[in-house]
Length: 296
Image (cartoon, rainbow, N blue to C red):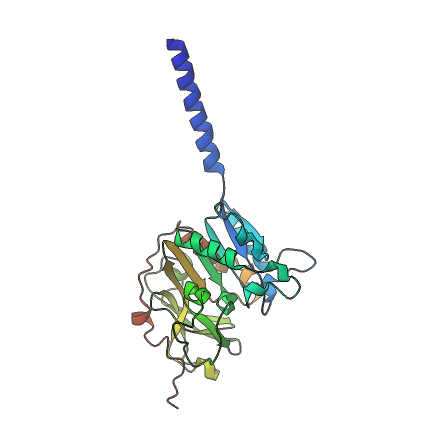
């Protein structure tokens, strides 16, 4: 009897070791969604069926951290089981319920949208890159914030809505200190960068600003406004949502320094980097929802 007990005890231990070892080796997984129902950026464009520049960048950098990436432009993926994903990343544009011009069947359905929201509110994470805030937006006058009851769920989820951008130019980005992201922290209090700079409206009061677009020297009437958030995060239920306006150009996604920040945003969304998301927009950028300096 004692030999039988010992045998089964050893078998139980062996099973536990194999099970947990297998679990430890199972890669974490994220879903990268890059449907372009609107303008298709070159960074997400697939040529001759090959992965886009951003597909390659995200897959490669996440692999270094043991994170598996599933890349897709097909919104029907959200109709299925999303339980295996720790986080989601969006680089989308336009009305996602329409799919794309070539593939209307790639639509993000109402069911898919509800599934995604449920996953996030239950603790999953979400990152939006560059054109993500140009998705499912209300539009209208770029110099007027929309009534709160008209702002779309998608805009509320990401924390703001893209309005317009001016000519690409170099400007200053200020960093809110201390930063939880080593990519930002290494740049000190501010840095200069050339990019296509988005401006936003309908900022939520609940966002935490990590970096600020300094508008004072910028060319273009759309930038004639107080400094405003350019990188931020917020909580949606138990989930962590982040947005970075960087990444218009292909070379952004080919730069190893920039891609480190992409990885860190994904890790923060997945809960692997500790981030304070206490709302601070009203103290860091109190004029964020002032859309023009003109009194006329």
